[in-house]
Image (cartoon, rainbow, N blue to C red; front, side, top):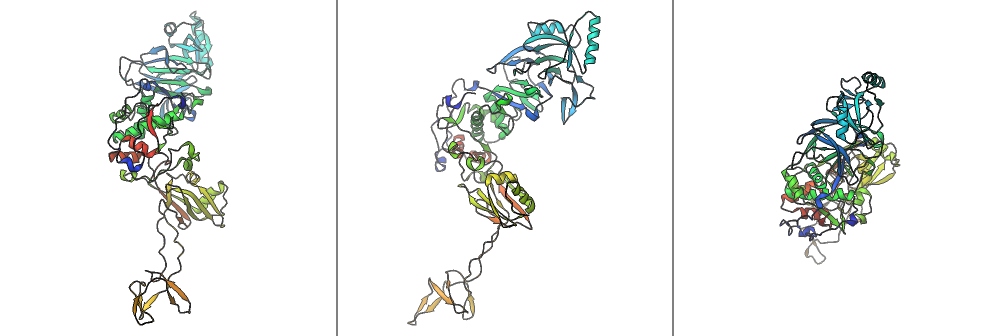
Length: 589
């Protein structure tokens, strides 16, 4: 991927440099047209990889007339080798796999050894090689179960598939009796086969012999328009790349235009029914975030994954006219800080205050000056229900702390938020053990240890503060009074004067004690619920501690529900972006 330093930005005039100015900026500035070529960028999105790699994956045309096979070159351009008119196909790793349902998915799996449909890993190869897919296909079609294969850059004609070498030997002998000489071929650990879904009919076989090329596949086009492929409950545009990375199961990558990718992210991260200005803010944030990550999954030979680890993406599955329009109206636009694309993190809701990247990620705040925490006055207006509670008993909490090197004895006696961040979220939390020892953890450690839903939290019960020394109980003529206000005394000249400040009384023991204005004795009231955004503490309830909080997510950057509320109040996507990402401007990638 091109490095951010090499990109040229066309800066849009910065609107709304402070929260105070936001109300002046809600007039709906229209973005300039995207520069030519900004929509030509290609992105590789990992759909299935690592522990989620597939032994077999089904595909079906919802538009188009089958698929073409080939590979993607170094510039991510598709090189076609051949095609099929079949609209329902499956891509499998070339080993013994069986058709049926396993772990809730009906496709091809190696574990279903008793299934009726099996695609075997042994084949018979006809003599010689061929110059093209068509020639190899023509030669193979003369035999039942024949198919073209592209092995190490050369076309061959192969026949049949067998789950054992003995089965292949028997078939070889039968062909030899007809005067046809063949060679038995197994498969390398990188082989990939394409079959008609639900059968063992092979349409094409591809093996790059470990060179990392991978097999490419795209829907056949029948004219202009958007061609959509259905796979595992999702619909996708663009093409697909299959590779058995390190000889494992299939790593499956969706290769498509960058703006088409953003059209798949926006409706997955926000509802298509949300206000257009919120969706536009999401489009710019998603575009910026993806570009700021670069090729995060280069070890798997793709750029970004389809999970929340990067950004949630499900192709065209949730897209609608509203979310598409948000992307189209902001084509190429990104958040910019100091000439570079900003890493525009976002999350669902913050419960009233966002948080700085240094608090949540432990990063150097100077590297992300636009990701600073702030009180959020908008999110509360969205109506989002984001309260949560997390209960943990004293002994379990002590065990978790001990695992972090904090020995508090057999249990925890009390917990206190002892320091707040600039936006009022917990910064340090102090745990006091049954052994009297105190340990303080930063908020990142607490959230991780207890799996809290956000960085805005407190306790359900606060410890009552120590009562201050009470003022003496006052009485006049034997009747109690609430305080000294409205009381009069006789001075040395016999005049009646109001009781003012610095008044002392003589107690029954003969000592003097000051009386403060407005007090008539009694202790201070005890604490109630541990408030969010405040220093608070708790001794728990019968050895059980309950953390309460608001929000959902890491609290860094843009609150999606806050964006919703701002859009509802008439703010533009630029207003939203410049509120949640302090000091950024909006430019072009």
